[in-house]
Amino acid sequence: MGIQLEVIKFFDETGTALVQRIPSEGSTDIKIGAQLIVQENQEAIFVRNGEICDTFGPGRHTLCTENVPIITRALTLPWSESPFQAQVYFVAKQAFVDLKWGTKQPIAYRDQEFSMIRLRSFGKYSLRVKDVRLLLSQLVGTKGRYTTSQIEDFLKDVIVARLTDLLGDNLDTILDLPTKYDQLAEMLKGRVFEDFDKYGLALEDFFIAGITPPDDVQQMMDARSGMHAVGDIDRFMKFKAAQAMGDAARAGGDGGSAAGTGLGMGVGVGLGAMIPGMMQSTAMQPTQSTTMSATQHCQKCNGTIADDAMFCRHCGSNQDAQQESKAPSCTECGHTFKASANFCPKCGTASK
Image 1 (tube, rainbow, N blue to C red):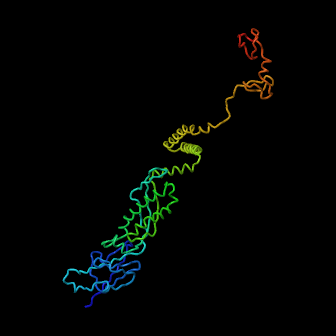
Image 2 (tube, rainbow, N blue to C red; image 1 turned 60 degrees about the vertical axis):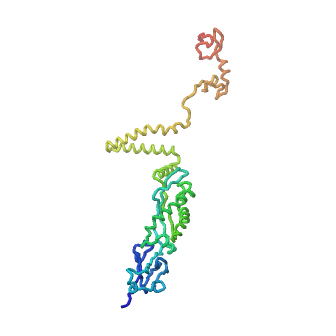
Image 3 (cartoon, rainbow, N blue to C red; image 1 turned 180 degrees about the horizontal axis):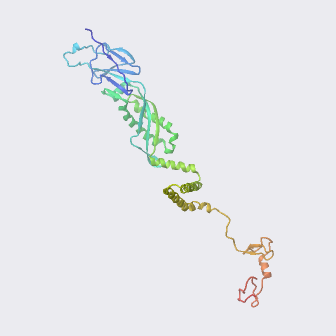
């Protein structure tokens, strides 16, 4: 009876297996002439007695005496299992895309505009197995199956640790973030390259999808941008007040519910108290004075002039000279005074 040849192959239906061992548990005695089938996106590693004996690329391979011990079940009857144990590791060589990373806890960051804040960040990356021997020795070990989900958590921590240093060295304020995503992603990719490389992995692509501050900081940023868009805050407040008055008037005269009418009246009353203060700046603008100063008539041309004017602004005559020439004298003491005076300012004698 001839020896039945074994066929060793592996298909990954999930697309997440970095490494799959055959057999998945322990090891086995692989017969001479076994057929090893390696897919286009795979590399097979033949391990015997705990050591890597050979590697196989895509194609069909016959395992012969050069890589499989010359032994069959008939020669191993004295043992419960063959002392010559072997395994085959299938390593996926395609690019693993759409792998996600993100901060489990917010990153403390000192911002020049907002002081100390906490940031969250997330994104995607893709990787490829670069060195299968290094991957097996540094990460996989004796595991029967190693998937991207098993390595993602570790790589996330590596990426976030490097991002923390990168932000502190290259960013002054989060207000500059929108223009720096691509630059930060390229710099971060360079920093984590060596971390991936020492495990036999190559980082293909790296993207930062977002770096976000807490909600309260985002509200502050929105408020700042709103103030910048408004420009003249005084004019904006007057506009909003007038708009609110119109809304309140419509709500009050809508003929709706009592609650709606009451609301309109309440808003109107509140605005009635607010408007005077808001409009004060306009009311205080320089205008022509409404208080008229005391006046008199020119003694020569009868034009209206200021009470303390020395010369007439219409005819230019000297008002003191005019008053002296027409001023009456006290009949008692001879003191000269204004014609309009009823009594002498010096002795009190009646002028008429």
